Amino acid sequence: MSFKNNLAVQAIFKLIGINRVDTSGQNADVKPCEPLNSEPSAKSVINTLFILARISNLPTVWSNCIAGWLLAGGGDIGKILNLCFGVSCLYIGGMYMNDACDVGFDKIYRPERPIPSGKIKERTVWLISFTLLALGVVSVSHISKGTAFISELLLGVIVLYNTVHKHISFSPVIVGICRLLLYPLGATVGSGFLEGYVLWGGIVLALYVIGFSYIAKYEDIAGYFLNSSIVLIFVPIGLDLIVNDEGYRIRCIIIAVGVIVYLIMSIRHLSTQKPADTQKAVSMLIAGIILIDILAISGISTNLAHYLTVFVFLFVLTLILQKFVPAT
Image 1: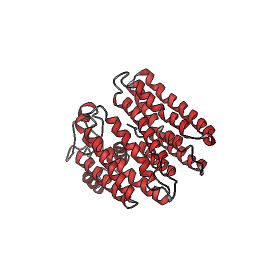
Image 2 (image 1 turned 135 degrees about the horizontal axis):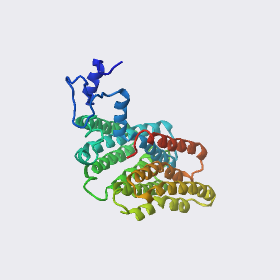
Image 3 (image 1 turned 90 degrees about the vertical axis):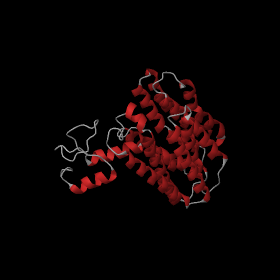
Image 4 (image 1 turned 60 degrees about the vertical axis):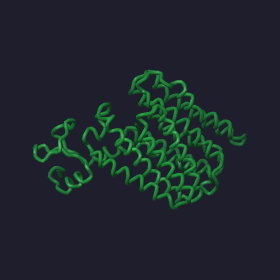
């Protein structure tokens, strides 16, 4: 069945702002950068929405929340699932806002992005963003006062980042703060309290994210912040070996060695100083966020093997999704 001849599908596309090209030349919404003789398929529409959402990174967000939840004692699985849904809305809404805020930059430097290429209208992206951000906060605010407060704080940081990140050099620090907040946010639905391990875990995660975010931000400037960024990437290893006592030291060392090997495999792509290899390194380091979460929980004793299965699944899922949707 042709989408061109299906009036219902055409109406839906027009409503959500996804443009089609009428190959007959009549009533076509053609932009200069759109290829002729093409029309959107269901697959291309979904792909556009997924690219805007950076959907391949979503499992890393769930992993952060689950790690914070476990460090606070775990507890009601229904609450952590509720939280993961709400944070997913905040993350995707933030990603949509990122493209909407960057449309002027992308028209010049990244014309292949969905908005400047005419695949979706800017106002549609703003509408989806606002809807998801609001839904994210509302869906978790009822869990507890702490959850409501931190989710609103996270929303503010997301908006701040998207507004200023193209105008300041330290925007990776704001990204790190977003990730840091996911640990205490996860802890607010745990059965315990907001303890030191939660905050330390969030801080080292933030340093790790800041490290590879600087690499991503200045990927076209060879050597810029590279050495200090690499140091930040390895900070979680040190904390893992320091905070875990003798009872868990052997286990933590084994996990740390595995993480070190993966990080080395990731950063070796930086040696060529080619943008494509840098993007590969950054994509691998984004997936590595889940390994940092595993380091954070490596000292807990309750059902660790069971939880490790969840984190390994999320890690593999991230790598698989990155093959279909770019991580950056």
